[in-house]
Image (spheres, rainbow, N blue to C red):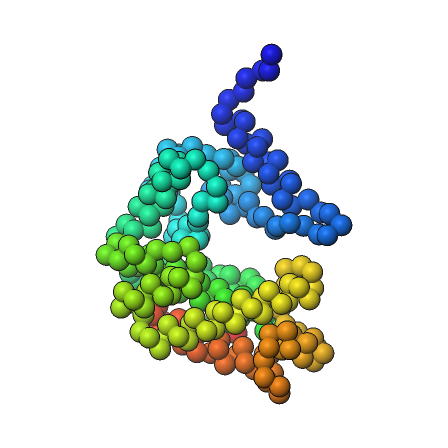
Amino acid sequence: GATPIANHQFFTRLGQKIITNMTVMTQAGKLYELDMRLRPSGNSGPLVTSLTAFQEYQREKAWTWEHQALTRARVVVGDSEITRALNAEVREALSRPRDRDALAREVLEMRTRMFKEKAPPQGTFDIKQSRGGIIDVEFLAQFLMLANAHHHPQILHSAIPKTLMALRQAGLLDSESYKTLDQAYALLRLVENRLRLMHDRSENRIGPDPVLRHRLAKLCHLPEGEQIVEVLSRHAKAVYGIYRRELAVVDHTDA
């Protein structure tokens, strides 16, 4: 008969097979881009883990940036009992009391490091990395979740638009700031989608090419005469002002 193998070995092999099937290059391209380096210990860490090991890691060893990433976690499919247990553990990890100032410093340190490593070249707007871009909106939302979830667990959502709405409803974000962030994030995500369609790959930078900029503006349904980078820059400036205010710092790594 079949040779039995340990649970960990079985699910590691299953995980590897799923990843291969989802990322294999076909004539139509890849189904998804998957980055498994963000798991605990990176590429040297286990691909799968037990619920107990997950609980211990999140409670005792996880870095702040890992809890930021955990705010985006959601179960796609699986056993209902395990799903409930996992969701409960995620909420427990994200809802623990935190020192707001210490949390702000850690979030800012990570964001500053990312910006220094991936800052866009002069004349280029990066919808993710430029100041006031996608990452600043997400880092701000994640900071506010981690800082306030202990007293406001209803703000925990894996989708940023839902998070922003919950923060406004909880009185943790004023209406004007909510509107600014929500509109900017929607536009940035739209541009991200159109860039990927144009390049047939993950692409976040808008260079100086006027033809590309004009085409992108039309794909994003901007009014005639509106320049895509100028519009994005206006939104980004407003976002970055809220970002600096909420984290109570002046960050000098402006894009």
